[in-house]
Length: 187
Image (cartoon, rainbow, N blue to C red; front, side, top):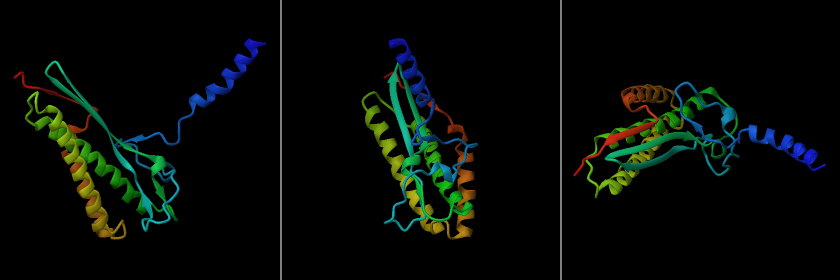
């Protein structure tokens, strides 16, 4: 009887493990654009915005054997992202660019880390400073994007920003990677 109960329990729990959580982050990929189905949060009724994209980074770093290892992943958070009203392609394209801007700054972070000058004493503070300045610069660009495009309503500015971000992603292509490894000075 215990065996039958264990088998039934196993059969009912395995499908649960196979399903993905709807709140699992979506990692930025050039060939995986966002869809309106990715937006799972309840809309913020106090916001004047028609949609909100919650994107950010997950970052780690460590140093060993005179090498700095850092990983930064750009992600989209479905259960913190929402839309109101009509699901227009124009608005989705605007929201996609918010996600793309976040990816640009992941690459900026890698570029900054690779060009910084380190000593063992300055490494922790420098890594924190690079990360904080990257976040601050990202927030400035996200606000500038919304202001200039009037949250997607200015079609001319929206098209200009689309080209700007495409060029920026292309110029940062050398930093399109999962992990960055930097040789550290031996002194």
